Length: 147
Image (tube, rainbow, N blue to C red; front, side, top):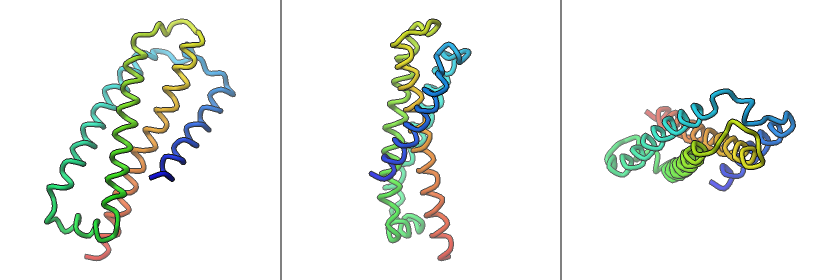
């Protein structure tokens, strides 16, 4: 999990350097408030979906796949990846919600910092969801090879 967080932060910071290099401003993104609103919607759906996955996992105790997943050591990895993705998506939704209250039509230090913070959490959250999907598919393939 520490490795996942470290990689996510490195990727997020790398994208931030690119954004800073090209001097992207909040006014360069048309309809940014609509983008924030869409981020809240999609992030909320993803949080709900991932939370449902976490609550279903313990209830499937007799499932062959779950037994094999525990045997392979993937149960804790998937659970930790799910928790991290939920936390980051929730933070992204909160940041997007706060952004709806800013005057985003003018460039200022606050709006620039907000943009950089939002981009960082957006990249990190997308990466964390990708880790959940790749980890799940990896263990699904491993368990399928045994049957």
